[in-house]
Image (cartoon, rainbow, N blue to C red):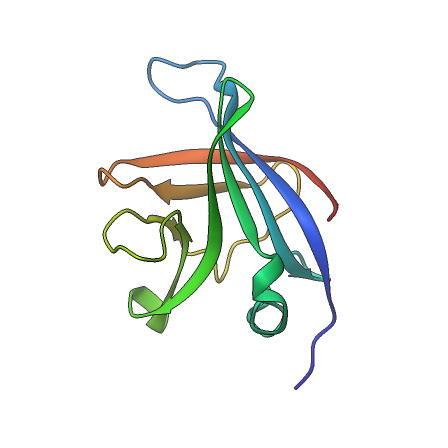
Length: 130
């Protein structure tokens, strides 16, 4: 089955949490990914456009790390979306929790496990054409 998708730039910013009641604007990610009409990441779109699927980790509004949006076998649901900053090594990835079922639209929340194993919540703040 073919689904319609569009390449989008997704801005995630750190959501409010204990010790950060206002969240952390400028801390987060810019992700370029194919979204279907409902706002889900399209696996079919990623497979056909994976060379265009990037992630930039942001600190203080500046890009501090460049990587790829990757999809790997394993994990809950049979596969895991991750941010891979060095395809030559393993263990340095950041994992998106339930990215396969999350809707990426402004105001929605997602969780990401960083390379140290800590889980942080991010809010989708902007979606724009890639």
